[in-house]
Length: 108
Image (cartoon, rainbow, N blue to C red):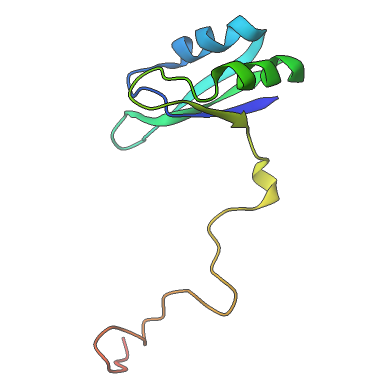
C-alpha cells in the first residue's frame, strides 16, 4: 500500500520518514518529494508499505499528529492513472493569444 504523507517538516529526509513508518511494519520505500530548482523538501512524500494492514495501521496512528508546526496528513495515495491532473475545463479554458486583456484582437 502506498501512502501519501503531507505536513512533513521541511528538514525531514527519506531515512527519517522511513524510520517513522517502519514502526508499523516493513517499508518498501520512503521518499520525501524535493523541489528540483531549490533542492528543498516540498513538505510531502510517499511511503510504500509491504502490507496493506500495516499501511492502514500507520494511517490510523499517524494521521493528524504533529511532527513540527503542521499536523500530518496520512492517507492512501491515489492511483496516478485515475486522472485528477490539470486538464482544461470542458468548453475551453486554455489561453488564446487572440483574446487578451487589452480589449482588442491583435494578431501575433
